[in-house]
Image (cartoon, rainbow, N blue to C red; front, side, top):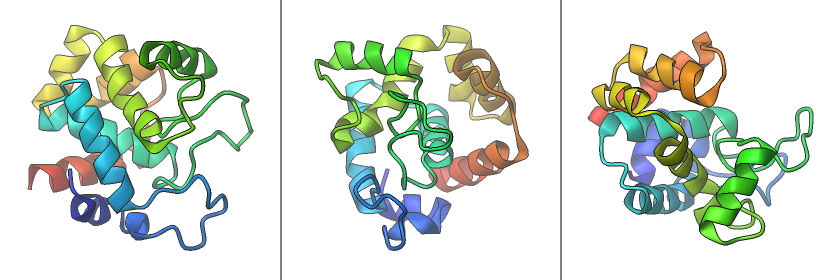
Length: 164
């Protein structure tokens, strides 16, 4: 993924100007490098899976402006996909760090780790298909959240930009 693709999906990723927590913000250029590394590390090769990962990170981190849960402020919840403290503990152990929010590669890597280790083969096949149904199943059956118009809009923009 490139910085230009991220900016096409979410123009707010172009810079961190005005970020409420500037030390947590990552712009598209920074994000693209770490996201690409995560795709390589976790062997996320299908456009559908890649788009789901990018889409959920953009949504959960407010276009990469946040790395920790501030609203309502759950201690230990964070990374770019806002994993729960329990998943962050598992992820930290898996990659051998104490704080997966401490650096961009770890923080941006969490969503790819999650898909590759926590989602069923059926959910992953749905993502690989690159369909709305596949994305919705990922949200409800793997992430454990509800489908919303805002999430679907983010997915639609992401899959369109990434398919080119």
